[in-house]
Amino acid sequence: MLEYNCNILNWNVRGLNNPARRKVVRDLVSETRATIVPLQETKLEMVDASLVTETLGQQFVDNFVVLPAAGTRGGILLAVDEGHYKINTTEVGVHKVTSIVEAISGGEKWSITVVYGPQEDQEKLQFLGELRWISQDVLDKWLLIGDFNLILQARDKSNDNLNRRLMGAFRDLVQDLQLKE
Image 1: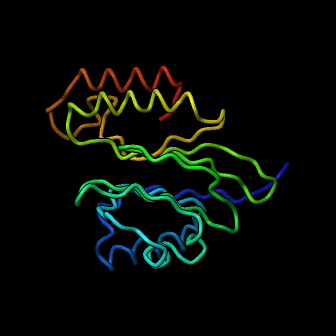
Image 2 (image 1 turned 135 degrees about the vertical axis):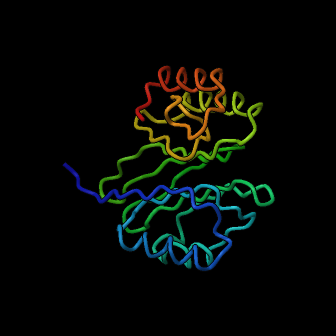
Image 3 (image 1 turned 120 degrees about the vertical axis):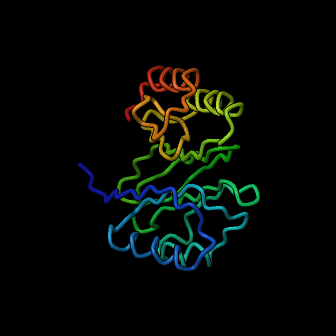
């Protein structure tokens, strides 16, 4: 059996536009020895190699993909440690990034989709449809991760403002795609 180090640090950072927040992320990446880092809600329209180095470390600078924020809303950064993985192909959508990640040791490949779901209810059904559509094009080994901005159950919500139709649609997606929470 091939061995490789897979430590995933997934986080809705609620903005990387502050140097102090980037330092917190970098410290956590170092502390956890993360080798795959999906970050949501970067709130950045532009992410370049220097920002990736500052936020994650030099080992991530050549293997990252970005979904830019729309103004100060949204944004995704997916980066992998070049000592362990490489990103082969990527598809960037409206609310997601899907990449094929390959382990340097042994070449095992899988798909990873990082999502940051829309805030507006009318866009959420379209977003769920996008996830159904991309599930057709991913490898058998698939990690779907991120902030969906949807809930599966009423107890997941901190108030009584529930949209049961969206909850049901999200539950149906989880069941139909055989996802695990």
